Image (spheres, rainbow, N blue to C red):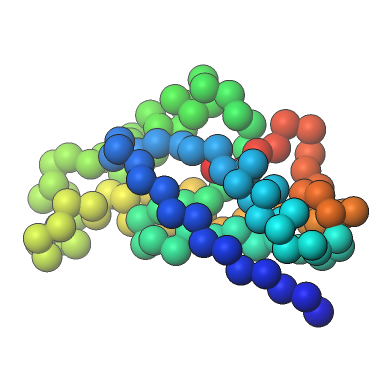
Length: 120
């Protein structure tokens, strides 16, 4: 079994945003030389998510609105977690909904996606 590890570090200026990392993952796969198998992509920060979906701005806006309705940032007193001095209690809930990781099949050295799938 062959494996390869690469970390991507991202600076996200907004409190919540969706960054398409598909090309970064494809580049890492090419570097690995792996031709067949599985590619695991996981967020290593407790308030970050990884998911696969369409790269469509309206969908992303819908997600932001939906997530904010499910776990609003304010009032900060809503979350016991924020009593530790942090203000990200909502982000922990949003991550739980959006997920920590995705797995994509690798076929002939390429990510094996559905038609519109991208990694965010």
